[in-house]
Length: 235
Ligand code: HEC
Ligand code: HEC
Image (cartoon, rainbow, N blue to C red):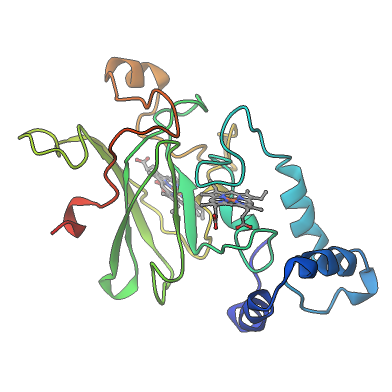
């Protein structure tokens, strides 16, 4: 299920760069041939990985625009968006922030996701209206693990009012991320037990979410103005 080591990753991405529409078909053919299982091509030959991707199921166009930045909230993005996965775009970090622990449909629009890496490298990313954020290797050059992470939602991101950038809630993960590019590798949708802390959430109960009268995006995507930079990245 894990991404291949970075040494194996380099030739894979090169193969990707050359890929033509036909390459995917070739890939599909190669993937079906077990005796080629040791060959590195830009799709997953690892049956466990492929089963993982397949288990996620098909796109749900009634819930989000398929294959867009809004799709598959809460799912392990980098399972697909990686050298071994079926998507063309690769992410070094990606996930979804929810308001509460249970409700799939209550996700946090414009949450600030702050990452601190070794050598105190700091980055901050903003979720979209479906609660998703994703980071390319261009946006986070030389990303190194382990990482510390926190999420914050303020009253009105980017607003000019006195209380607009005041926090509704901040949560910091106390353990670190050792190597996973997908938050949902650990934060598994619908699973909250000894095996997983459950979906990433701002509040521990849905009741607290109700009581806090949090700003919920009425629809997503929408045309409302949205902040894409964290306060520390605005000039
Ligand atoms: C089951 C596989 C799968 C999962 C899981 C998945 N994606 Fe995708 N995603 C795709 C495919 C396939 C596309 C089509 C474009 C491509 O190949 O990059 C796509 C497209 C996208 C695009 C548009 C990319 C572009 O170049 O236009 C974004 C952004 C994106 N996904 C983000 C995410 C995020 C964030 C998550 C997790 C919350 C996620 N995806 C989960 C397979 C997946
Ligand atoms: C290696 C597994 C793992 C990965 C990957 C992971 N988390 Fe976590 N996360 C945990 C565990 C376990 C907890 C509960 C204990 C703790 O806070 O460390 C947690 C808790 C949290 C919390 C809540 C802390 C609190 O206040 O209780 C937040 C927020 C969070 N994670 C965000 C993220 C984000 C964002 C990502 C992706 C960038 C991510 N996590 C990736 C394992 C993981």
